[in-house]
Length: 158
Image (cartoon, rainbow, N blue to C red; front, side, top):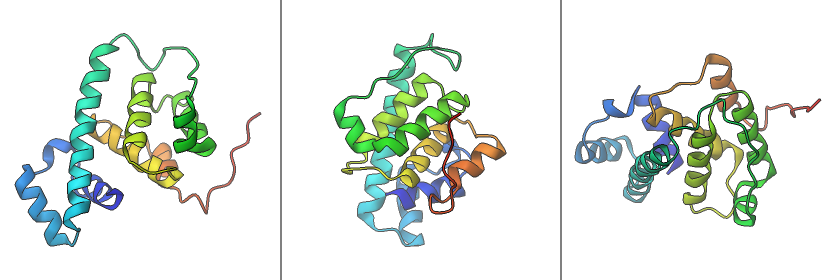
């Protein structure tokens, strides 16, 4: 599923540049993606649009300047892990994502149906959330989102 999402991100500048569902499925199949992966990815994107609409409608007053502290429940801690939670907090403190986008990222990570989401997959989720909203991170953040976790130096908090 994540390979399909990355392909869509790299191929289509904006979500509205994608062809209709039937044509997109044919194109993805022609590129070599499995039918099951295509179905999962397109379902995940449909749910992303619904979640974005729902959460944005409930919380229009929340912006990047909202303050507060997010407490993670046990399931979120287990699926996300400390590295992913730290990365989400980093993105929010750097104002790359706002509290509503943070909640969308968390919801979509949980919807990926994995026992624990890797940091690389979380970065794809963040990119897809921003992409779906027509937002693109600045160059430095884009590099951070695509930095391979094997090459990354640990972040120091001081």
